[in-house]
Length: 578
Image (tube, rainbow, N blue to C red):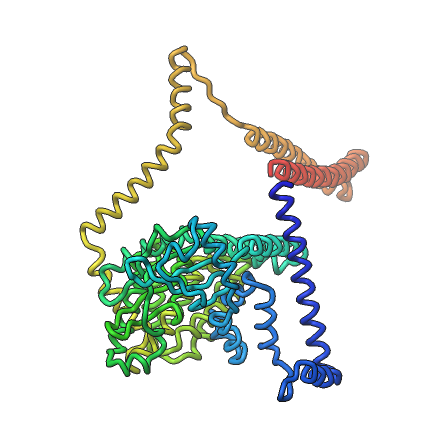
């Protein structure tokens, strides 16, 4: 059986599983809303011998359980939604946050089989010791603690067994749904549901390739070398592959555990500044940034105060122009320039339906006016509100910019609890960018960037040179033969000339008829005067006048018919060319 055929079978089986799971949860929720719900829970208590009464689960809890039952792809989607938690009710935010931390682990035998398949030997041979109980379990992988043969403690990230087959089936279903939605719904076409799901699919498939994450780790580590107190874990490439990643074990607490850091005698404000400086360097200076810097991915060593950025699977890249717009966005926010903020976001966005810029500017200023001034507003809420205004006015950002704004909001989330009350995130971030720019944009840096851009231009020239060279050689060959052939498409010009000729004829006829009308009307008036001796001539003048009127009417009808015919022909020609 071909790969495509097997993939189709997997998608069909997966679709049946998703459908049955949704039906089961839907039926269960429907029963809970009827008087039978209490009886059902009483029977469950009796069958499973639960000591206390079983409460009816709230909708947020049921949704979280449903997402976990559907599997890793849907958990990942839930995590993306939870990253926009500022616009969610508290109970929904709390439940979706559990998707980040409380995913049931896979059995050890399955994890062991993945390591053997990827690294060619079982973990008991590759490592001096390997803890079978995972330190953490996420939607796509879980992490085990191990010790190398030289005594170094490491963390081994192992992809869940059979994950790729299930994820690819889920993504195939999602893309099918996107195409179906766009065929059936004008809103889905405007928003670009199929494109969004394709982008999510590509990003998720990249996360399944740990070679990509290994590259991200090494590149981010190099970029952060100049930031004191911040680091990325050391990678052990010999014990890493597409589905297994071995890195140094990072001890410490989450950056959100402020009480533990203070109890250890650490300067939490200095830790927050260092982490923020690193985040802004990645985001607004380098343009290659950690795409998920939530507090769970930043660990603080209680002995040294060093901050380590974990989980480098999701990264983003921004062009110089987009970085400049984001810096201007920060600057506008700190100065309460809501109109400037709106202009920056408008410049970064693209429409998915007709946009009225005056309505957007009015809505943006009205929405932003509700937040505290002087850059003291909650950046997560401000950015979420700004995204709402963009969407309501038919605008959207590209995926990289959306990821960048999410990373900025998450940076605010880890920085604000550590900073003094009089130091808002936006001001601190802008100060960091100013200092980093002085240290980064040296003469050597500008020269290096110039070389890179020159190489890009040269590569493009070399790519297109064969076409230009063939054209030049063709001209040279024709010149040697003493002649040169030029092709000029005059079809559109011919149509215009013919149209001008027809218009000229109509104008001449119109002038002649106008003269006949005027002359016959004058003659009729003169020859019809009392005492006139030319009654026959007056009669013929009247005939000429009425004949000229009739001919004028005919000419007008012909002209209008010709104009309509030309318009239809041009429309058909344009459709054929498309």
